[in-house]
Structure formats: C-alpha cells, structure tokens
Length: 255
Length: 329
Image 1 (cartoon, rainbow over the protein chains, first blue to last red):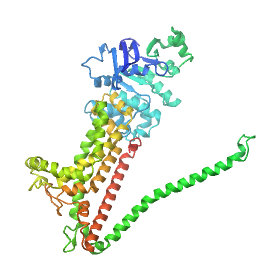
Image 2 (cartoon, chains in turn green, brown):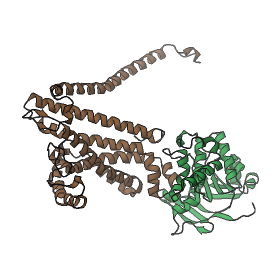
Image 3 (cartoon, one colour):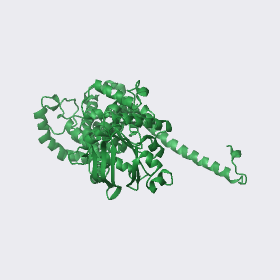
Image 4 (tube, each protein chain N blue to C red):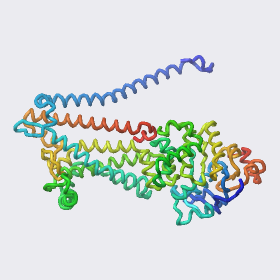
C-alpha cells in the first residue's frame, strides 16, 4: 500500500444510551484500504462504536454522542451533514444476514442504487453483476437472479448483503460480526472476501473471534468496558500486547 | 419401550408403569375434547347452510338463479329479485375500503414508525376503542352528525368539482350509498389499523436497519423494506375489514336510504342484503316473502365465503416465494 491516508477517524468519541455510557472517549484512526478489527468481550462497546461511525447509533432511542467522527477530515455529525448521504458513503453489514425477503436476488443488490436515483436497466445489470462477482456470489446465483433471496443459504445471504452494501460504491464498509451466524465454510468465504475487498474499500470489522481478527485484519483494537484499551498492528497486538488486559483477553483468560 | 437399555439397576419396578398409563389417559381425554371442539365448527357451518337452504327452498324453486339478476322487490306482487341488494352490499363495502384502507395504513405506519414513543400507545388505544362502539350508535351519529355534514358541505363540493363523473350527479338527499360507505369506513378502520399495526410491529428491526444503512430515509425504509415485509399481513388486515363491511347491518340500514334500485350516482339511496333482512324479516307476512329473505341470507353467505376464499388465495399468492413475509398474520 503506497499511500497511508487517514480515511476515517474518531476524536474523543463517547457514545451514550440515555445516561448510560457505552463507549468512553475513544480516539482512533483508520487508514484507507486497510482492514481494522475491533475485538473485546460482549458488551465492551465495540458494536456501539461501529454504529456511531455511520450514525446508526442515533436511531436507537436515547442514543447520542459527544466527540467527533471524521470521514476524510469532515465531521460527520456536523449539522449540515445528511445521515442518509453519509450512509451511502459508509456501508454496513450486520451480524445476521438481512436480505429483503420479498425481493429477488437481483432486486436486493439493486436496492441501494434505486434509492439514490433512477438507474437505467443496463447500468443496473452491470452494477448487479459486478457487485455479485465482487462478493464471490455471481457463479452461484447468475442463473437465478429472479429467485427470492430467501432461497439462499445463510452464508450466501450474507454475501448477498455484502453485494447489496458495495453496489452503491461506498468508501468504507462496516462489518458487525458478519460471520457470527455462519458455519465454518461460510465464515471462510467471508474472510477471503474481506481480504479482497480492502483493495477498494476501507474496512472496519467487529468480531468475537480472535483467530478471525488475526487472519483478516491489518490493525486490531481491543475494547473493554467501553474503553479502548489498546490499538496497533494486528501482529503486534497478538504477539506483543502492551497492556496486561489485552494479553489476558487474547490468551483466553476472560471474555 | 426399550426400558431394558436404561441403566437403572436398583430402581423399583412398580411405580413407573402406573404413571405412564395415567398420562396417556389424560392425553386421550384432552385430545378428544379438542377434536370435538374443532369438529363443531365445520358442523355448525354445515348446519347453517342446510338451514338457509331449506328455509329458502320455496324461493329457490320459484325464482331459481334469476333471483340474483332480477331487480324488482315487490312483496305484494310476490316478485323478488336481489340484484340491487347484491350491488349495494358490494359497492358500499368496496367504497368503504377505498376510504378506510389508506387512512388505516397511514395511521398504522405513523404509529409504528414516526410517532413519538409517548404518543403511540394512547393513540392506538383510542382507535381500538372505536371498535367497541355499538353499530346502532354509529348509525345515530351518522343520522345526526355525519349525514347533515355530508349533505351541506361534502356532497355539494363533490358535485361541483367532480360532477362530470356520473357517480357525483343527481339530487342530494342525505341518506345515500356514499353516506353508508363513509360510516362503514369509519367502522372498519379500527380493525384494519389495529391488525396492520400489529403486523408492522412484527417486522424485525434488522429489516428497518438494513434499509436505513443503505442510505434510505425513514419513508423509503417504510416503502422499500417494512411494508413489503408485512404485505401479506396487511392484506389480511384489509380482508378482515372487508368481511366486516360486507356483513355490517344496523348503521348501514340507518344511512343508506333503503331504496331497492341500482343507481350510478353515489348520492342516491341504495340497499344492502343485510339491511333488507333486518328491515323486513319481522314483517314478512307470506311464506314466499320469508323464503325470499332467507334466500338473500344464503346469497350473502355465499358471497362472503367467495370473497374470503379469493382473499386467502391472494394472500397465498403474494406470500409465496417470501416465507418470512408470510408469517405476518
């Protein structure tokens, strides 16, 4: 990677649910075209942190933040910023596959694009095919694009959701435990996919699975009880963690 | 029973078999009770059809199927035709749905997706209370409040603006097909709203978030993800409303004008099957009049069954290929 531009960053970010602090004072930077893993035990705030990045956190009742989230240096919480526009630049994939059940495979992938503007059929065809190829699903579904998305297996549905997320060409992709509900085969394919996708996108991935973090990510950040304990290159975090808590977690002593 | 494979060497061999037999007995009795209850429903329905059929045999013999196409209703001359009644029942129900469905869905969507949390429960509660008002009270309210309002304000306005359509021409009486449809709409709205609201509440939050994460606005999330997910349940809600509108009697009788004719204008009075039965049953002096009214009841029953069957078919077709959406109701 020739350039190391900071693509996404948070500056003293605190996320609250009403009076409860879920994320405390986290400052992090994510370099363009890298995979960044967020790890930590359940309830440590890593998912909440992820959801502040594309302003999904504020959709929950009582969700609010202090501090800043910067996309290319621009504060995404500035009053003039439209959350809808922001979410088109920062896509998100959830823990459970969430295809739209009444739509065909094709329409699922096209859904984000159709929200933005009127798109010609030819352009749609092209984007759908490219997105499905990129998410390594094309060969499995190219003969049944009109079939319901519910006919796919869990792993295929999750790749479909990735295709749907990348179809409108976002810059950043947030993955919230994308393999938590998948079998080992499905998990492996998603991991390979993540590795491919970083050529084009900046990726932030929340995971429970430390081997997964070690396999796919360039940097790893350890969260504990709402605070960011340690961040650094993945190799360093897993071989020479600076904090005792980090070491305890990655060696499986808690969490 | 492969009891020999159980590793319980020191267990006494007396108690367990007794308790096993007992449990089986209880189950049998329970199953018998439930089966009887379940069978009672189709049995009752069969009995109902039989009664309607024998009761109307005289009229069926005399008028045959011409009964449903004839349009004269003259008890003195013993001439009966139900076409205007069938027309009135179907038209008033359809018009009521045309008014009630957009309104109910709008309210349901507002209450589940847009309203501030503190407002949701109270508003839903008040709307559901509307369902508890007796239909004769709706009828009275219709006569004293709704009809004067329609007659003075709404009907003249419709005639002035849409008067080029045959539906909004002719003299304005007050009691009319349109007045009955409006009261029907008000009466079925709570049912449609309340079921549609339940169905929308049952849409998983993940669907909502998936649409929003794609950059959808709240409204786009509703139209592209939430309503499609709930669609078969929403159709179910509409059918529930249709069923109620087809059979509603009292309020309609009080507002529709009870005139036995098919008119193009919605300002003109009409009649429905349920209304004619309610009005004439106690005063039916001749056997053939009585049989004709029972025949009307049979036709109403058949139409209701057909409409419901068609609606079920529609739900089935819509929800096919979308298993998750099919569980809405």
